Image (cartoon, rainbow, N blue to C red; front, top):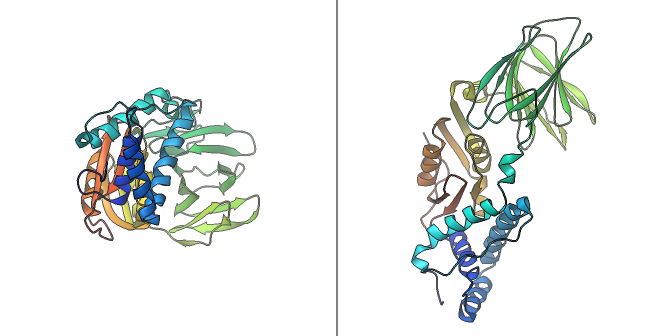
Length: 321
């Protein structure tokens, strides 16, 4: 075919071409037109590689070759994109859902679930959605391992036994205080009361006082900065607050409150900053708001996969509540 049906962004064209070329009856004319499209603009190749990475990443979950879709009229491409994604996830055996991190943890929450755990020393741990912890108390220390997700700790004082939270190779050491620990791209530690000490094997421990936070990861421990405690603790009240946050990070947070991955095409679009307040019990509405504000199209695959693709219309810089 000489062109794709209807107006679409480069990323959407790449997705459409992917579906077209996977048809069993794809013609030489199709392949020739695709080659012409691919070579017409360097941005086309970037978008195409992005689609391939998404597909191969999902395919690797099940170690199965990606299924091919039957030939249908191209006016139904959006539905076929969703149907093809569902078929792949079925073939892959839902491996990303069947073996979640922390499956055998001492305490864990499912998607969209929150709960509070009372520990034997009187300390309290609030678990956010998709969170798991292990608990190990001894005579000389109290130790919690955050395996995945986010938790808010309110620690009972015990001078003889420090309270230690470990996450991704680092640790937070306290005697009695309240603080939030979240595992994302890095681990963030925000302090609500008193002081904690945050360290990693490769970095000197840093003291963090109330109203401040640090992050740590492969690059070590960051400097201490002021924390937006309202935003940090919003999940405890069934909300998510974003103030000038990159869209990639926003979607990662929203993704913890729903089943199935959220995939964004658009390259630098994920770096655009978002300011918004969303309810955690209606993530689909949040995604619709983001799509409307940033001129995105959403394809949902039966609750298993959400694909967000830029529309041809100009995009705004932020989502405003």
